Length: 121
View 1 (cartoon, rainbow, N blue to C red):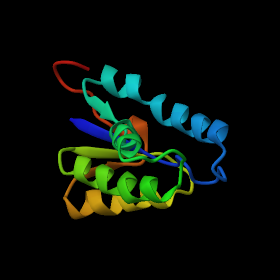
View 2 (cartoon, rainbow, N blue to C red):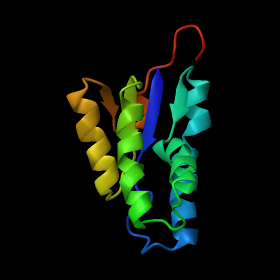
View 3 (cartoon, one colour):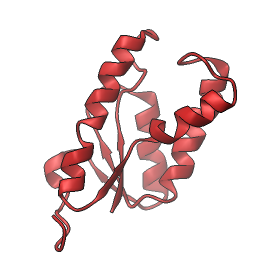
View 4 (cartoon, helix red, strand yellow):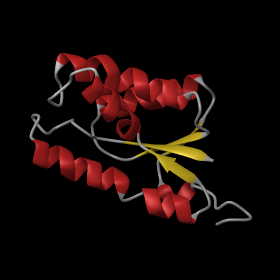
């Protein structure tokens, strides 16, 4: 499965790059474990940030960031098979889960619930 990892990214950071980095590291900490279960992990910001920078965005939460962050994630969700929603308050992650459910994707709220791929995990 292609599994989007979502959870707090900028939420609760006040735009502080260090706090955002901690949130990103938390999201990314699930990438290898998901891969080891035989799946391919992805985080929306991995795709959104280069687009945001190319469009002239320079700071988390600026107008350009807001213009692209969620639309890129939602376009990515159209290619995903599932979502892993990490705990923590996050409007963006809640929107991702809502969109995933509209698309009929599986939504995992616990890493342990993600099954291992029978041939790879």
